[in-house]
Image (tube, rainbow, N blue to C red; front, top):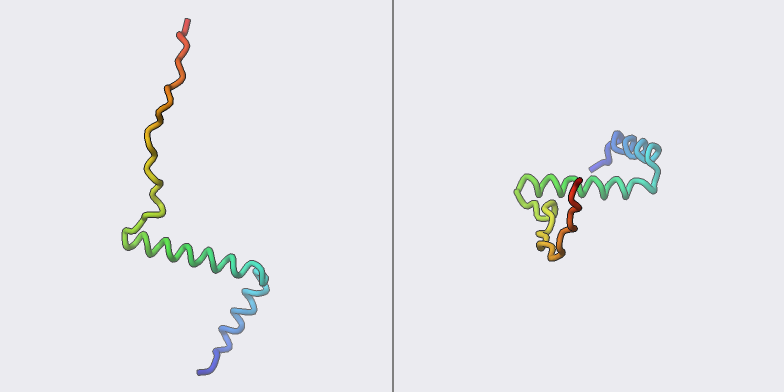
Length: 67
């Protein structure tokens, strides 16, 4: 199987536009986006729901009467 020339051109353009240091960051973001999309489609949104908070035991601040 021969490597198509258009993929090589696309790779060079991406390297020129984003630089070598940004590509891993871009791929990580893309992977997280795809993972989030798959979780949303399957209904597994365990990461997006915040953990349940226990009710606070502190007393609310007393309000001053208005004159």
